[in-house]
Image (cartoon, rainbow, N blue to C red; front, top):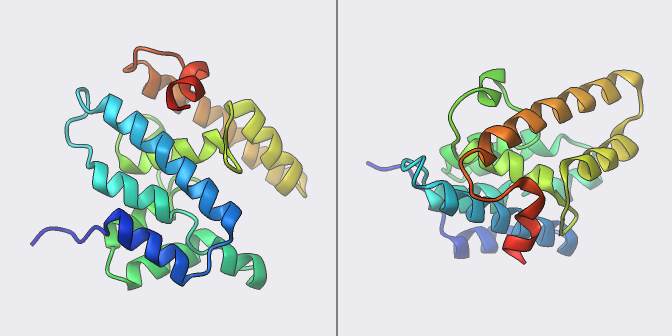
Length: 183
């Protein structure tokens, strides 16, 4: 039996069901565009990429963010739990790792759906495709309430720059051109 992966239509219905705020929905749709564009262009190097799984993971990565803005819960943990409870276990693994990876090996290993949603999320600020420096400056300004948090965000930035190099060595354009390619 193959793993259950929700269609785009099902993901959009789930976003509506969870009353996703329009700006979070817009962000998720843009993350999806970025992730799919990268995935489509990396298929020749990584033929096991599942574009349906990539799309579902990107669309649902912030599924719990609206709720967690109210409850102060962890949108990653809550979202992964929700998606898993709906029977989409593989998609839940993507949701669970869109902020940071459970294993540092992801920064050194193969490129898969988890990596592409994680990276795409770091390239989209609200609904705009931006470079990593701008996105991480925003993260520090918004969430850097302590020195420890700032250090974690800075470490994530360095790891994501390394990840970006690994992704773009397989593409015929540099990271700076991503926005132009998608627009």
